[in-house]
Image (cartoon, rainbow, N blue to C red):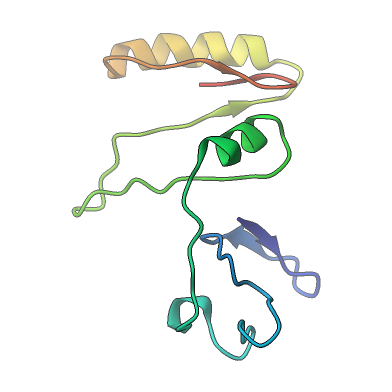
Length: 111
């Protein structure tokens, strides 16, 4: 889930919780989500992925290994030059990776 502070302008991402801001259950901001005993993380589902690809909401994954390395990369191309950017990245990725997947979005492509 993407969040943004209206007062500071800071933004970031956090795991989605089914109990977030529920009266009598969620004690934000007094208790941080990581310390909450009522934390109920929402699992990734086909419906959530579809809503993300349709632009309804933002989801992300953080596939870090135990040594803080990562073999997963997702790139979103939505600007006017997205076709040229995809081609340039695809050439680079074919030299670095064994495979990649193009996923169309509403206004561009995800690689």
